[in-house]
Image (cartoon, rainbow over all chains, first blue to last red; front, side):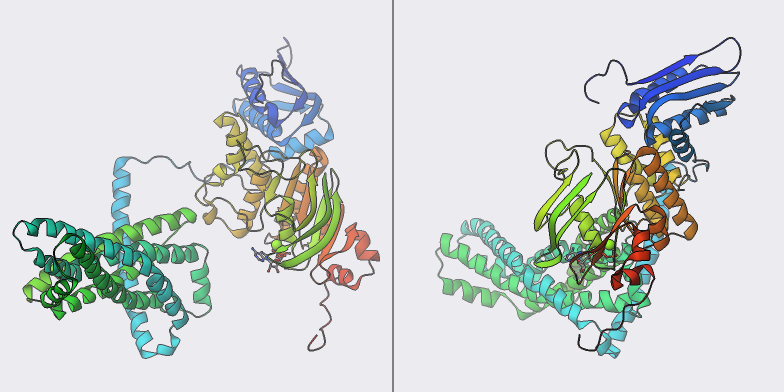
Length: 380
Length: 251
Ligand SMILES: Nc1ncnc2c1ncn2[C@@H]1O[C@H](COP(=O)(O)OP(=O)(O)OP(=O)(O)O)[C@@H](O)[C@H]1O
Ligand SMILES: [Mg+2]
């Protein structure tokens, strides 16, 4: 196929005798390896119409494989459509049989090839999709609430084994990354604020800044982002795969509600895991601040910690942890919703996972903003 | 065409088959039989080079050992494979699935690929479904599309894992006819895993029967002969569709 073959190992010749049908003689080896040449040859030979019909002489054919048979059948069909009689003659029984098998395509294509759609169609489709997704989302929310109430009323029907496994994977296994990011964030915060506060001789307030901003805002936010990337993506991919391989449907036929069996354990586990991770992040972030203070400021560790203790109100910590719990709730809900509504195959799972993470990140920030307003209004 | 010698295979440390040898001749329709879970699909995975045997040798004529698609520029596959589950690529239409090897490994222009793909789909009765996605098809249709894909490059050797499972009797007979026609007209060598007795008697020129307890081949030869003259009770039960005698408790 790679070296240029000057003479193809097959014969293809068209004669137009003055009387009778045109003759197309084929011979030699007609195989996939020469199929491109054969295709071009057939195209050229049949470019001229054959008003008195065409007789394809296959007597000289030594080998005919499936691809060549398909092309011959296609060419014959095209010639017939152009209005000429086409006959195959001289074919050995094997060749005739193969040709017959490959000329079976009779049904017109049931669906046009997917093509790029005009912009307006696209916009319309996207708009309809928003409506559908909203409906699906609300439906999901309702089902999730129903699953939660059922779980509270009949706690023994809950899949606690899954919940424990998810708690371990989403919570315990996430500790290293949460700890390292919280420590680094605490250090960065401390370093940046110390640089500024030093100019006023107010280095000690670094402790206030780090303590309050981390516990109220940054620790829950960073933790939620990490959890969205780790566990949100995992939930969506897991449930999405189960969905497209009909495992979710199988659960239903076994009498198990997917919301109670799959969604509730994940939501419950994240609602528990998130505040724990955020609390850990609080502690580690203060440690990060302390580390910077000891390195770059003339403060004793004791002074820093005492200052931190005075600066932080228990309400700061509790409000942060409350937010973390809510973040856990929405990450789990969004991820499970996207997963359960995945459609198509592997590609659909990929789309569901992407969408889950993006939506989670947006929702986290939006909910955080709502909390900021609420806390301000109620003076928390 | 295929030479297997002293093959031992399994998963992890668990041995499924010990010291198995057999040959598949060119032009054979070689059928692999055996109860569910005895390792037929696993054997197939080894033959096509997806798994490494624990011991033994597999040689495919003109290829030596099975080759690896990830080495160098890769090479056109020397044989076609249909997996038990079909394994169509879910994000591609049927035409794209069947056309993928043609587009990759031949220099055919798109119109020619289209003509070949259409004929291949028609072979398995799926003309018209070119632009459907796999998840819009029934289980049997997916199977047939996977067969069309296995045949796309007109390979001299094709492995089929339960091609007629899940097909209605008419489609199953048509599929048998197709396989026989390709075998006759092109000398196509077929290695087929199947349980369908009618299909076995219709197409097989030779068969081997595997058994889980025996960890190997318990019978080989022409299935019709085995049916009529086989003396192994397990073989007779298989061909006569009899249940195994219930083992005594605790055995
Ligand atoms: N990926 C795997 N890892 C470990 N064990 C496996 C794996 N796939 C299959 N097995 C084991 O190997 C054995 C044989 O499986 P295989 O799929 O080859 O059976 P089979 O003969 O094709 O059965 P069937 O007729 O039902 O398709 C089974 O007992 C199964 O438990
Ligand atoms: Mg199998």
